[in-house]
Length: 118
Ligand SMILES: [Zn+2]
Image (cartoon, rainbow, N blue to C red; front, side):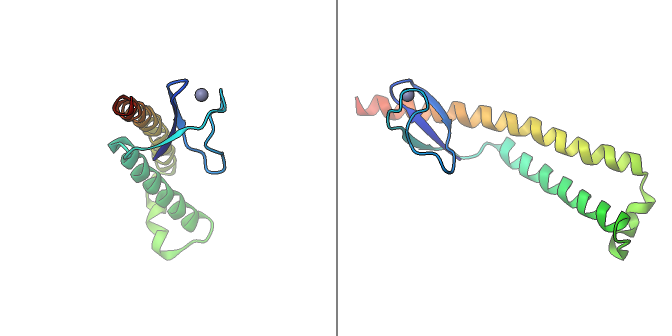
């Protein structure tokens, strides 16, 4: 995950795909900081994938009556939907944790690097 660090404001923000590398606040050029995703980020992906598979199976069974998804019909529908949305909800929580952690890490790396330059 990449962040921009503004040396003047001492802040980091997530790098946006189509944004330039200038600070939102002072328009000064920012430094790109690379941070490894935290374990929360990988949990988030896993939960998203699990929820995605559940949604696909749900649609396959209820919309298309697909044979491979017929077992979905044997599971309590309310329970299935609750678990499905539960996974998505927990994924949001982990996504928040991940951004918080990686952003703090980006700031730490940026300050360390800045300390070496000065
Ligand atoms: Zn700035």
